[in-house]
Amino acid sequence: MTDSQQATTLVWFRQDLRISDNPALLHACQTGKILPIYIYDDVNAGEWQNGSASDWWLHHSLMSLSTSLNDQLLVLRGDPKTLIPELVTQYQANQVVWNRCYEPWQRERDQLIKQHLKQSEIEAKSFNASLLWEPMNVLKKDGTPYRVFTPYYRKGCLMAAPPRMPVEAPDQINFMDSLKSHQEFAGSKGIEALKLLPQIPWDTTIAKIWSPGEQGAKDKLSVFIKDAATEYKAQRDFPAISGTSNLSPYLHFGEISINQVWYAIHSIHPGHAFENQGLDCYLSELGWREFSYYLLYHFPHLPEQNFQPKFDRFPWRSDSSALKAWQQGKTGIPIVDAGMRELWQTGYMHNRVRMIVASFLVKNLLIHWRDGEKWFWDCLLDADLASNSASWQWVAGSGADAAPYFRIFNPVSQGEKFDKDGEYVKTYCPELSKLPTKYIHKPWEAPESLLTASGLALGKDYPKPIVDLSASRKRALDAFAATKEE
Image (tube, rainbow, N blue to C red; front, side, top):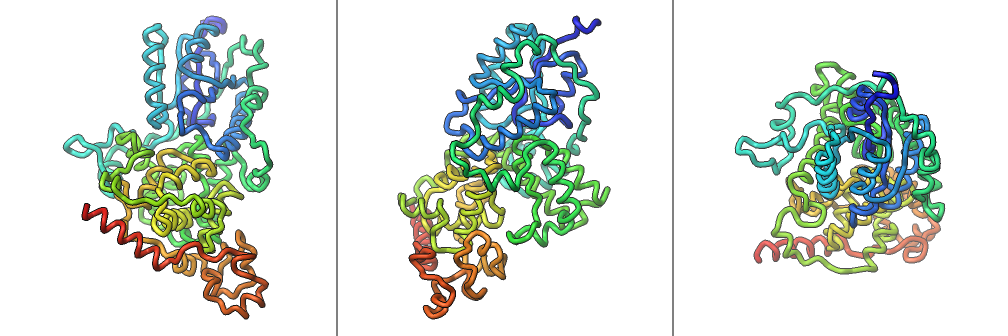
């Protein structure tokens, strides 16, 4: 077959913005010439359109991918259900390939596209490039989905066939010659036309600490393996130290695959990774990510509806001023405020602190978990529909395998346990930095003379607590008890 006779494959990039371990790309490159495309779908996502932080990351990730593809990436905005058939016709493609996404709105859209292409006698193939185990293949003996993590992970996953091994990047990528006449749509110009960057420079700090793209993901993984992986279980709960991988944004956008991470962790102690407590704990956390996607696949209303219907009767409060104080890190509870300020300044929040701030919102403030879910969706660089909704429901007590509702994180004791010297709080609440460690997590208990000596006036330099922790805990438990009685 001559070069001009080679098959033309349209490669649709989505949440797989990488060259290595990209099954769809590799398949396309083995069959002939390719037309790589990215479509910013602002038609089908509904309320789950990218948040501001995700758009920032996407812009830089697409720039990185475009460079890896010799600036041949065709970038468009619109409805893929319309654009893909048009591109197939315009470029006379005989095949369209993509790696699967699992959000309900994407599954529905992709199924319609695949049906249309097959009716037009255009081959359409999809691949798994983002999960270790396909959710439709992991079921209990009775054919129903798991609802509890441990049996899902230990029995349904680990006792099944091992995850596929990562594949190498294509040795050679042959691009369509005709694309050269459409450079006004391709590469960085098309990306800039999406206008994903913020109108105000709130991303200044974010840009200094993150490097979106495939190489940035590989660098993060290398640092984690070298410095923290084997000690993950011992260090992961302490926000002032670098004890976690920080790979979640890269995994969400597919700049690195879960399979690459899984086998990289196993390579530290080949054949014995599960015997190391740190590695086993981290692999289990990757399992939690899988479980979140599993729940979203089998229970697609997870982002909007209580997984446990009894919570439909829960008496949530509507308190816009308290919600705003929580969003802005002005609750007067230091570990909560530090976490919310970290989120705004960095687009990220330490996982232990995520649980603390979430518990404070849904239990101490009795504000609906969906309000927290929406704020995280807009502010997190790693905003992931599966993980975000499953995690919020877990903390609220309404989810699958959820924490018992009566497990209410005490932010003071949590801060004293996991930020003993107050380093994390001082980083994001510098107005408290002169307080003695004894009071860093409860400044309202400090003597007035000590507050004065520290240059701190509660209610002026730092807020007084917007809620009494003990009283609000009791209120939450009473609300839950009343719900159970109903």
